[in-house]
Length: 623
Image (cartoon, rainbow, N blue to C red; front, side, top):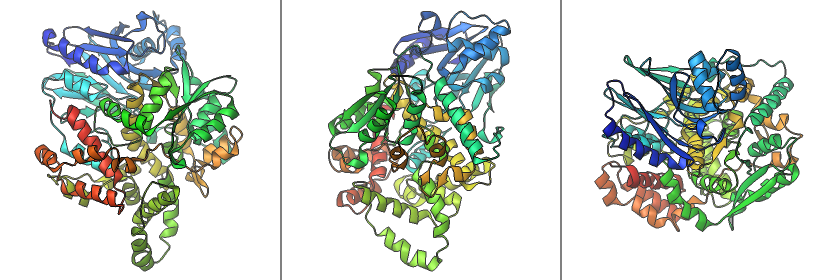
């Protein structure tokens, strides 16, 4: 909290204490505050590097004070460089290296950092606050300016507690929730609150706020490869270095291991020359094979010789965890895979404090099924329009859709593909990402004006990628939109709710640059996605791992919403409740519930979004 005209300490400190209370799960090891006449900083610590009290934060030294969330993996090399320039250190922490690096090099230090971070740095002599966020948005950072005061935090609810008047719903942001299932940067659900976008830093001083972008993937000098083999060789080297960097820890460390290739490749790299590294898999007892990960993960663990733990989860366990998941979310968030992510993080935290994951590989190397749809769309468009519109599309639209079995899941995917395959690449990507379109949003919202234009947004992101390769343009848009808005929100909130730090080697910026330099045919092929990963690391895993069909980290939400969660659905779509809130009309949600119960259409994602929003509204919607 910074007020350049001076802080009222008697009013500020209770708010700081309340914010620390909200942030306590993220940092259970220590809680501290620091203040002067114009700035108050607070920090809750999850101790990872240098466990001594001297490394606690807020940390004062080198002419400034810092509160910081994250890890700088190359801090030891940066420390040696700074020491050669005459800088002296009093701790072994990466926090002090970050602080000294900024003081020595200013914003140029950001380009030198390899890691994930969000930090606030107060320079009292200059009367200036710096807020900065990592390249891809792994760590959250929100701020709100109220007159001459700037409040900021890692969590919206903590930020609310710093502000004298924090209330209300940003209806434009809420429309994005029902468009994407999440709130994209820089929007937040709270009016006046902004998420600092990834790869940006902010200065706040007597001249006001100045925001600068310090990283954009499209501006990077990408490697140039003479052959595909050169690209795969470079990928192998960069990825192994990224994994090795992320194994530095002063506390116990392990790995998430699902049945897919992403986490398996992280485990294979980490296990090189290391015996007994710990791996963890969650599996749903009594669930259909579609939702089960344990047998495939066990195959990888046996092959690599890891110390493997399986976490059996029953439907009752998952259902019991839902309220804990919603408690941990500072904004409405409707990706239901947050629930198994929470359960995996909770179980893993019983043994380790740091975990490596395979997150980010799908966005960087083309792993999602929607990228395969992009390949087949060109073939589909060769068919005569009268055949597509007059026969194929009406027939496919009449097919049942469900996630209850692999067969019905294929039909659901086919329906989704045909619905968008005839559109332009930008419209197709928007359609495949969209939950509700403008027509449904117009029916759902009381105020149906100012609807999100997702196609325009994605078009700008594709254009900004500065590439003629359609696959790379699609991936760049998802890296900019879905990665910080969905995937990284889920991983950060669910892991930190359990005081577990998760590190993502696939999102090392050098690995991402390597992938961005590759042509689309090294991402997607006839046999599926992630061609580069399959080629670069074919010798590290059993062949069956690479041949396994893509699975999502999913739950049987449709069955739950019409079964054990049906009362929660009825409460979320209750007409009296909705009319009192004055935001959403009840007719469309009631129709969704009826269609799901009768099996006419799988509306589970729309209903889960209603449940997620109402869960947030009950907890935090009003002051």
